[in-house]
Each structure stands twice: as structure tokens, then as C-alpha cells.
Image (cartoon, rainbow, N blue to C red):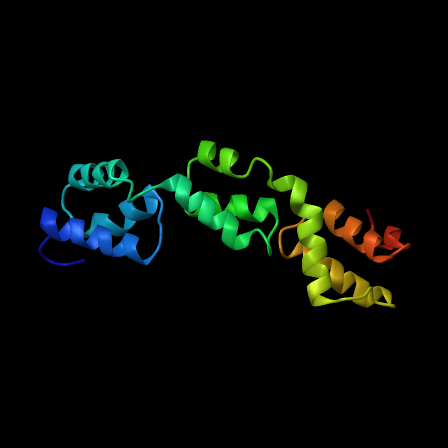
Length: 159
């Protein structure tokens, strides 16, 4: 933290510079700007102004997170990332409303890209299962992908 707080103009420049790099949530901006301003009300007023101008948009951030992660993460993982970034529960719910329906297709595409074929031995199939679980897919979705790939013995995976 600087010894002298930023002026309102400096704080505005700092905020615009942060938003120029990538979209951020209001809580991220609050956290990043607070150390540079002695008055929390000034930061809040600046963020209100940025939202009014459309420069700070949590809805746009949610859409970008979905677009960038949809092809390689589960709906649950995307929701978790949004919450970590400080998006409101209502925005997360609206933005991710239809994602759960695509989990099997997303998991299958990821599995095919990584493995191409079902492993012959149990140890390797378990590794393939863990690969999907580590990307945030539920066990039910991961097992369904392995069944689609041709695993008839998925009971081994302890449903």
C-alpha cells in the first residue's frame, strides 16, 4: 500500500486500467482498489459509476467465464469459479441455467480428446474416471461417459 492514498482521478485510472486487462466482478474491483483509497465510500461510488457506464458488468463476466470454460469444465466447476470470483448467486444461477444438460457431452468430448479409446485394464479405466472427476464432473456423469465409450464393467467403479 502506498503511504499516500490515490486521488479520485488516479483511482479512476487504476480502475479503468484493471478493467482494460479483463472483466472483473465488483467484489474483485473493491478488493483491488481498497488499498489505494482511504475512503470505502469513494471506491463504492467509483464502482457505481463504472457499472452505470457499462464498463463493470458482472453479467458480461459470467458469460465470458462460461464461454472460456464450457468446453473443458463441468457446470459445477464453472459455478464454483464464478463464486470464487465474487459473482452474486442470482447472476450465477441465471448464467448457468442450461449448463447441466451439456455435462455429458462436454465430458465425453474431453475424454475422447484425451484418451480416444477405453482402456483395457481396470487401473487405466480408473485413471480415466479420475480424469473426469478432477475436472468437476459428477461420478454419475463420468461413469456414463465410460459406458458410452464401451465399458460394460462400470460396476467395478463402485457406483
